[in-house]
Image 1 (cartoon, rainbow, N blue to C red):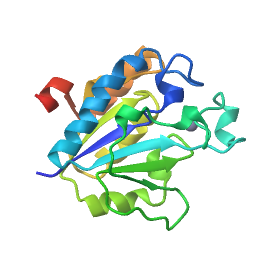
Image 2 (cartoon, protein in one colour):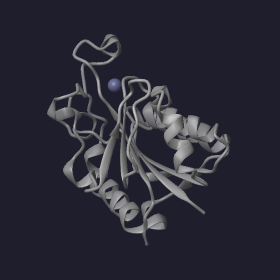
Image 3 (tube, helix red, strand yellow):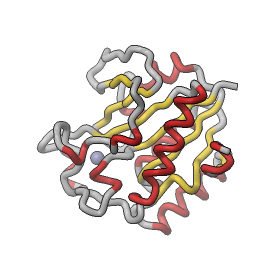
Image 4 (cartoon, rainbow, N blue to C red):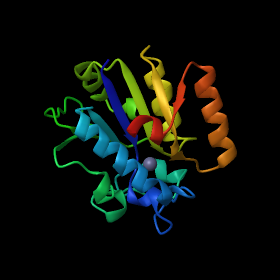
Length: 192
Ligand SMILES: [Zn+2]
């Protein structure tokens, strides 16, 4: 069974208290997320890392404080979540990424499926199962798992490697996910 790990928006602006759009408690996830990413690398599990890559005056900033502007430190992923072998898949139509252990998929809105090249990446990876973690449970993680479930493949959410903007909204998103057939797993289950 081919598993693909999906690491959602684990970027400095979301993960750390000094970040532009801090997700409460997210800094405590970084070591676990790094462990999951290394686990993927060690076991030949393809890793997709979604990232916000906004322009300076992105339309999204009418709703949210400016964050993850391309070229800023806040847009970067913490070093320990990066694999040595990585490539970036941009959102310009027709962009391609060479196969690599970690594919960083850029997006300008919440839902990674808005990257027109994402469906092609999923097709090329041909996963039998997705394992999803990152931030924020009630926004970008919710969008990612909803789209992945719609592919018809099993999707598991790592409950101790996610964090929500609002805990009650995160709990609601997790409930909706399991009601739709999603599975829950943990760091220990995946990496021990
Ligand atoms: Zn954003």
